[in-house]
Length: 467
Ligand code: URP
Ligand code: ZN
Ligand code: ZN
Image (cartoon, rainbow, N blue to C red; front, side, top):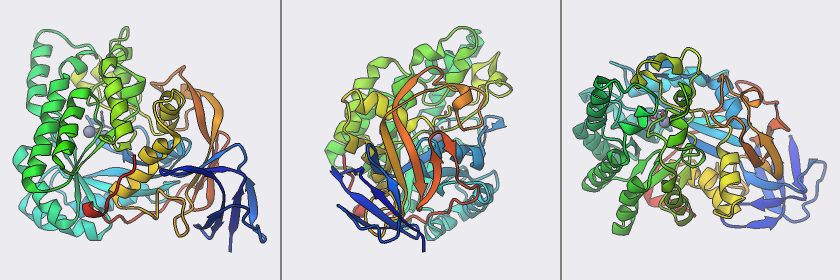
């Protein structure tokens, strides 16, 4: 039996912080308390460290075909970069392929992950074609431990795009099946028209990506999705909320008492429209959807995290190389593959910009990176908690660590980092997945293929979110 005792650290949970030791036996936490006896366990000195539950990133796109290419990180490099940021579990989007089924998507993504993942994982299925057989099939995925699906209201003209009637029926079917519906909320029709008009004017540079996806386009779709969920009587989760106007629709739904979960991402705090408007074609490195916004949105987003309208902080890690991938859109911004790497930077960016600046407490940090994600996505308390019986997914966080990001010191498979030159204050000193060390002092030590699939079970009524 393997036994580990973390001693001398400060345990930080979503509820509070306290001095305690943590005892691990055979991949599970068995005790949290003061002065626990070692009784032969290997001790890990956690003094000066904050002992946190492993972070969960429920928004990643590993080895995913998108925008005429495939994301640069596969399940090995993608989960390694996540581990280097303190993440011990991801939930990735398995795409239903054209003519394919939901279970086919789960199988395909299982094959992509197996033998490669260094951390634990789950899947959401992105529904792209709600045929009659898919409507019948939908309830079966809950039994497979896949408790969430995603609908894209954006990306008109691609197989991802979904009309309102299918979104609405997905909400109805999912409610009955115990499946949570996630939405990418942007008005695909308006964007397609604005893009067509911009290109006709000769406006081809990366910044037009943002100018053809203005804030009301996100706010309108967010409100529409929420209202459709209200009619269906279903819970809903809005991913990658980027602006105050979209957040307002979520806040109003909360005031009505509607069950609406919402996520925001580091790129909306670290970058802005100005990055998209960088000289030459540099802006392509910052093309993601929804696009980077004016900085004036940030106070509202911070308040959303502080006061609970935004419960989770995901990376939306969707990496493409600059060379050969982002470059596909040199003469036409609509051909730049959408997405940024960020799994490695997610927690460090939140600590640096949030906790260190006094905008969030360390407990809110743990809530939005870990505990709330486990609760909302149905993995709690196996994940997201430092309690006896939970998986021993542990981050020893060093609040004094300083790291300046550069493409060469990133652990993923991307030829640039949008965070180039940014100095992070605070970061993971070591990271354990089920008691196994996967990352320490800048080095990955986890074995590829050691990550396990985690079955999730969503019940909206059971979700109590801490903020
Ligand atoms: O730009 C983004 N966000 N790319 C990833 C796909 C998505 O919409 O989440
Ligand atoms: Zn999206
Ligand atoms: Zn995404």
